[in-house]
Image (cartoon, rainbow, N blue to C red):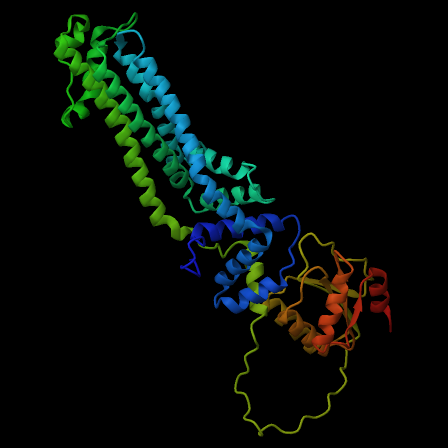
Length: 463
């Protein structure tokens, strides 16, 4: 998907996130993209590549790439902070288990060490199976992204939009549980490594009596619980207390106490560390396999509109062109025999632009088009059959005209008795001047340029 594989920062995720961020920013107002459109059209041969290239060029102007690089620099520090937070919690649990008291309730220790881990793991599994619970999985990964985006260190103005865009593209590609879950599992894996080290060190250097206590439950419950949880660790080489030790833990000798300790360490290693490590590897494999889903969604309305604009910039293909010297001398152009109609056309206006720009008389035909090739061909065919007496084309002054705009104005104006351009939505005085200069350079000086709706209405109603 990346057009420049040699650029390490231009990953499929970076391109998709910057495209979505530009889309979110343009919801507040269309960006001036004339130069970006031309550069993207020249740089890439395919429509999807041109759309991504345009977003990448606009992102450089908006500082999105600089923000992405800032995330990569701060991401390691943020992950380290989260690791230290989880490790601190794990150390507190270890201190609670191996405190000053020399007697440990092993079942309570089992629940306290593995309880939070089990709950968060269940939420992540639910995010895989239940789409509406996708926000519940990989909480540590989501916190890492939000914390990185919101850190005030050299933060750009569009950091929040870029974070939202990253989450959106991961959710659309069904990669959010794998991406955020992978980060969470990696943090938990490191936390369990340190927790196991602390437990092993404490149990090796101090003598503890491991037992169990209860008021409501029966001794058989603890026997079945220890045997069930210790079955898999026992098959992996960890010791497990025998039935006599389970029924009378207070009378257990040194060897029995050692078996208790190995049972606890085995459960933490198998049900904690091993499970998180396997999940982290699974997330990594799913991420590598699913990166193709980060490709541009060609059904997106915003993508379709941009593809239409790029399509309009394609050069006109001449079929069966005549050989040089074979063409007869060109006859003088005959005046257009118009059908007496007045036509107001909105050409590639942004969605928020008011339409029509003024209240036209009932005799004026009104048409709005997004600039697609089919719409242009239909209108030009209509004008070829019945040329307009007055054709007024409303354009967005803040946007930059391109070759597609030039071709449409030239062909539509040539099929009308009179043609004018109405510029609306100007953000500064230079917008209209830029269009006038462009029309002059494009040899379209015969087109009248209007900036006020009243003047445009008067031009339409002129005989």
